[in-house]
Image (cartoon, rainbow, N blue to C red; front, top):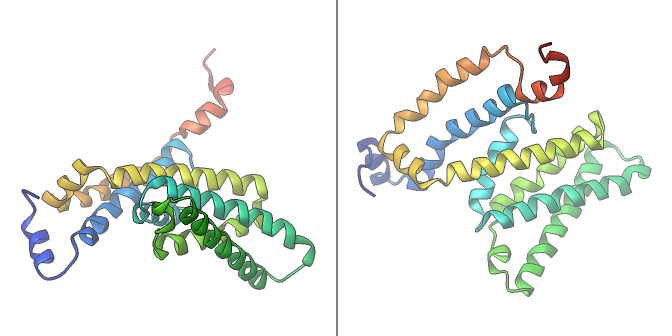
Amino acid sequence: MENINSFITLAAANGVPLDTLVLVLILPIIVTMIAFFRQVIGIKAFGIYTPAIITFAFLATNEIKYGITIFVTVILVGTITRYLLKKARLLYLPRVAIMITIVGFSILFLLFIGGTWNRTGLASVSIFPILIMITLVEKFITVQIEKGNRAAIILSLETLFISVIGYYIASWPQLIKMILSYPWMSLLTIPINIFLGKWTGLRLSEYLRFRQIIKPK
């Protein structure tokens, strides 16, 4: 790759994987994008950490469709399992442990099906993205308990939406080339976040929600 920054070249020459450098430099862009969606658009998702880590989990899968499949499976199985365990009146941690176990076996079955149907991309998904998305179960359960099923499902869909956008941003070849040539560009996210941190205007979702009220007469 041409025009790589000298610092990046030096780091790579000293054994730091180029993919790691790219991901670390793109991380500020991804979390800034998530902050923008939260502060300006009004899409909450599961905070800032969860969409960011799921974005990188998607990058670690062979194709994003397999990442989405695993994500949806985790949410569906987690919801069904929680409903089945509801009458058991178990304490929180043992209940989460059971759910993670069942979700884990569900993913194992999904990978088996992928291999059976010659979906080698699905069958060969590494453990890293699988573990990340399985841990989503605990976050999902917490929101279900605190805010109900509807809120948990909406936040899950918002998280999926943001993570998919983050995936395409992080895998955009032109952005990767630019980051490797000008790694300091990631620091530009700091003033952007300062601006977002002082944002006091209505979010886009609020405009849509209250458009009849704020509509000028």
